[in-house]
Length: 294
Image (cartoon, rainbow, N blue to C red; front, side):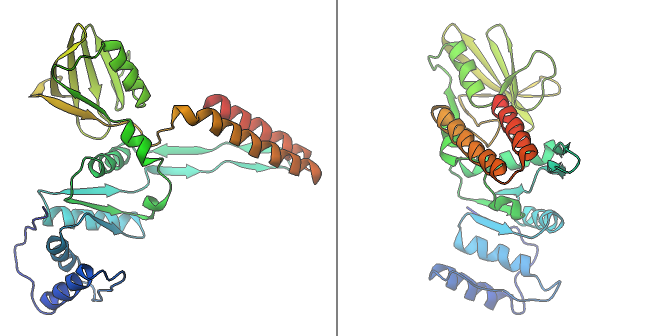
């Protein structure tokens, strides 16, 4: 349950605003507006409303700077609840471009912020964990496609001490959930195998899981510090969420590839019909390359 930590009580117009907005939400009002000048306590008022209605909440803002500010404030108001931060994980993004006059292709260039990616994944894991006391502060990036939530949920690996599962089957499940086996650097979203022990570097938190097998049985599950390898605590069960939110259903991959090929062929035919043969050749090369990478 949401439980606000407040060093002071609502004052001035805040109690009436909290009462009226809470009433509107409980009566099913779709749109309500809270007006107030800078410094009038709008965020504090909304925190009180969140505590009153006890519903999972999305706070949507128009830029990353305001997201960071609101995230910090709500984190202070709800220190014991799941306050999450969700923005685009690109520090830099340059889309690919093609200039047919000079036959120049400019490749896509980007830089991903690993810490932001961790926070995005932590948001999705908490949303699917069954918690109700979750508040997500997000920029407009949250409205864009993030993959199929059903497939993401199907990719969750749930294990218990004493489960009968061959080690290799467990490793295959890890790969299917988009984890990579590491022989060197133990980075986020990877796992390493040492005999009957599998260490997993979870991409959405700052610790890992260590799963120990005895034959085809899970003998022990524990959490540990990534940097030192020191054990944090023993666990009876664990849920391992996918390493990436873009889970592609394997049984649909062939169908998806055919749809891409059909769309590519249609675009190539169009370019040829209007005399743009260089563009037709370029898009065919790029799409075929991307499909090979898939």
